[in-house]
Image 1: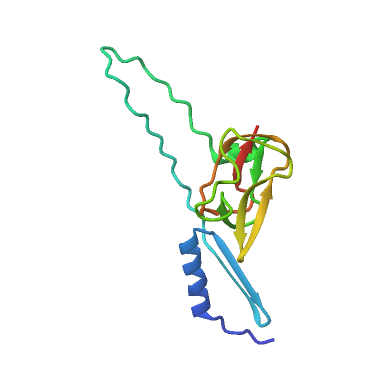
Image 2: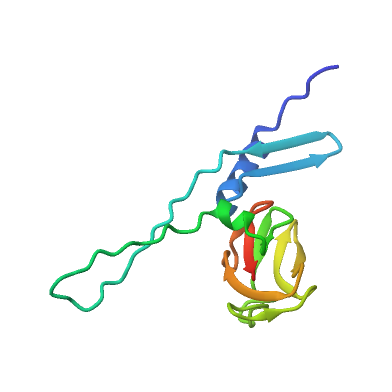
Length: 153
């Protein structure tokens, strides 16, 4: 069995797609073979700022609660996670109202958002009835498999 030389231009093109979309992995398969390109996911820092209030003569110490980590969101019993790698869309089309908003009550089976993967728009539906307490993605944001998208309480 002779080894086929790899297509360096195809690998570079796939790597460019990873950079452009923010994805960490992409794979293309055709009759002559398969190319898989992956990169290590760099952890992102979460920065929280607190707006200063009116000046006080004596400032009391302020304790800030730590921000919820993505791992905590993924383990939340009401987390709705992504079933695929793709791009999240919160509305059916640009300029349209979003499928759901914070505080909205949803029923089981209601469309929460879309994930576009390979030019196919997949509806992400509510697995149970509840209230949308957090939306963890923005429209047009790349998402990974298993990534928490929103929290239903």
